[in-house]
Length: 104
Image 1: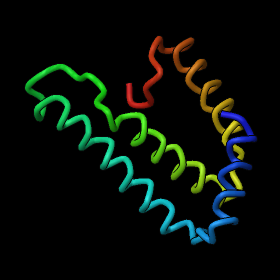
Image 2: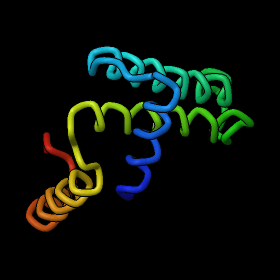
Image 3: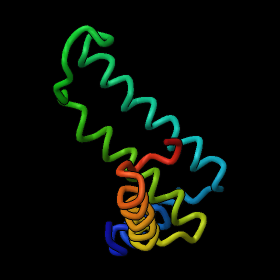
């Protein structure tokens, strides 16, 4: 993730009058993740076969990314910094517990 992506999305949102509050942005993100999940369900026949990305997979991932960037922009979060911090958090967990999960 680079700052340029956040700037591109902010410019697009401004240009097209798509600015809205963070509550809507989070709901939109959840909705887009739901669409991504539906792609998985359809591609696997509801879990009856292995997953292979379908023709809409890239577009759905792009929708999730756009929505996530909009949430970050709406709340003043630098995603590059957030990613660096979370990677360091996971590195420390793996180093100390040999696992990145928080509940183990």
